[in-house]
Length: 364
Ligand code: SF4
View 1: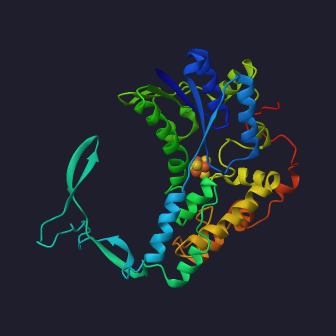
View 2 (view 1 turned 45 degrees about the vertical axis):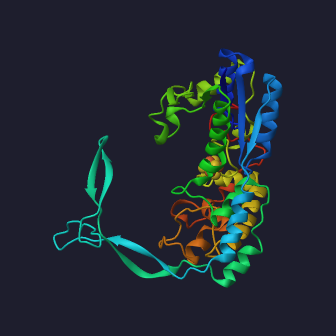
């Protein structure tokens, strides 16, 4: 049997993708899935229920569970007796400014494989040297007591993931997408393949969405029985709205409330304007993230971690001053300031919480 697994997020692109799948494939072979991050707006759940009813189909909710990882982290923290330190390193250059190669114990240059222009080459590894005094790898007894008092699964995948990792994700370490969405969807699909089926993974990706997606392929063979199909790669956002509208499907109401995209509420990468909208319209979500900061900080070895990592401090090392500048309250204040981040704009005062602020002109 060929199953068409459609990843549904509550946004317009995945709704259009689901519509297309139902139009083109036998209904009994279409399986819509929703990977619940636990950081969703209530409107997303309502919209999924609306889709189920409007399209007469059941959407399967997949939710990651990190109870085992948290239990094993508790054991690790309780047992941790390491004494070494971890250092920042910088690359070493000779007097002419050429990279100095790293050598092993016998004086031989250490090589590694790198891909250049699609060709795998052997290149020397550059020597590095330690800088600064380093930081303790070991959990201090104080940090152990603090973390062990709070490290219990809450049942919320996003929060549990961050407690397990001891930090929030960031643009450079975006493990949330991987752990909460991609891994869940892939495990579901692999399970079907293990039961002897073929799987086509329908994804509502558009090339004009972002740089990362600029070269998205329409069809991709991922494995012997697994294919990715992205029917919207050449569509624009307006085409997607039009297509849904022609088929009698309403867009998620969040689009009419200033949200450029429907996903986590908020996403760790949220932009300044959208954050202002969220702080006015859905302040409860930001208050919740501020509470999460307290919990994840308590579960972290350093004792602090912030939901946003906006590089709002000149010194970008992970220390307490940077942490203070990135706290949810501080980031909201920053979002409400004008150019240069110094002058309050009072912009937020003029946003009526019920007014339409859709960036797609939906309420035209
Ligand atoms: S929407 Fe943002 S916060 Fe949510 S999983 Fe994706 S990157 Fe992470």
